Amino acid sequence: MLVGVMATGVDQVTAWSTVGSALNNLGPALGEASTHYGDMPTLAKWILVLAMLLGRLEIFTVLVLFTPAFWRR
Image (cartoon, rainbow, N blue to C red; front, top):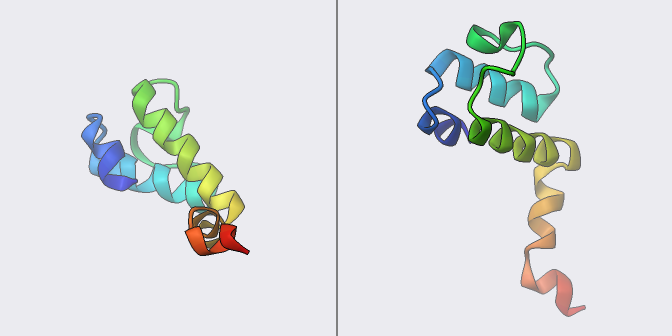
């Protein structure tokens, strides 16, 4: 996720803190996103939406849904 956000042109501090904030519900981010996320690229926001879903649903629960053995039962 961090590399994906950085690939959109966001600096490392902002990318690291926004991904951490999205995954762990840490609160406000640092860098460019300290006031709001509106200035971030659209693709970066979609990556953060995915990170929020993974963080809220627990990553392992989401991974189980993609495991073929889970659906064979």
